[in-house]
Image 1 (cartoon, helix red, strand yellow):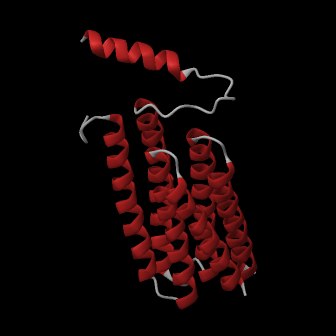
Image 2 (image 1 turned 120 degrees about the horizontal axis):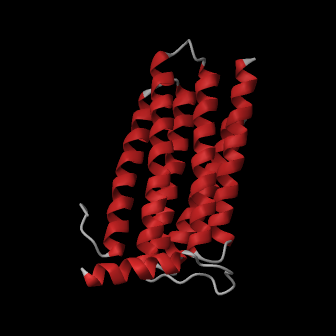
Length: 120
Length: 86
């Protein structure tokens, strides 16, 4: 039973991974690609780790279970942090949005922030 | 069977990431693709450790995730034009 559940989790995780990577290729600008790829791949990898944990048997191998949980927690903390830092860095370094983007609320914040820094 | 399909899917993911690394029009694109590649490699390590029953493959995954996180943060700070501690 745990074998089948583990396989289902691994399969769902792989589907998320491949969809995220297709988004990485297909979407038009950097910010779209960033949000598609980061969220899908983080979720997919966590599901694969969960599936590996269930398939190996949660009670059977303590080493594998512990490492899977550690890895999952670590990825769930670090991947969004890295994506946020990258988006901020990309905007500051002047990467343009797609020309068909409809709204850019961050622009106002960014302008006031930079004028404040210049005043200091 | 599951492992063969899984490896094919993950290798396809890696190739897509490498395509974005090679073609990406801006520097943040490349940094992001390297970050995603790191997470896909963690997935690889997990499946390898399930197949062989050796838990140390997951250590490789954890280490790879840590190093790729640090590298991505450093690149992001560099793009922003600030030092690492600001």
